[in-house]
Structure formats: C-alpha cells, structure tokens
Length: 64
Image (cartoon, rainbow, N blue to C red; front, top):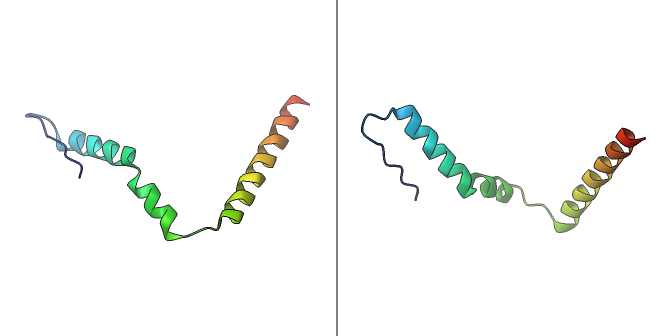
C-alpha cells in the first residue's frame, strides 16, 4: 500500500505527482500489463532477437 503524507500548505497536485512517482517505481502497472497477455518464451526470445538484429543494422548504417 502506498502512503503519501500531504504536508501543510502543499498543493494537491504536488502530492498527486509524488504518489504517481511512487506508484511507477513499484512496477505494478507494468506487471499487470505483462500478465494480461501471456507470451510464450519462444515468442519472447524471437522478438528479442528481431530487436537485436534491427539495432545491429542501424548501428552498421551509422558506421558505414
């Protein structure tokens, strides 16, 4: 549970911003999205490989 103490004289917007920052650090939303659509390990590996190949091609274009 995330607790954000609002200091005296502090605006609600600033407290909300601190809450959002703390919530983002916990990674709950990221994990929820990952669990919504299960992806097999083979598919995950394949997408990672495609990304790596793409990055390498970009790197070679910039160098050569």
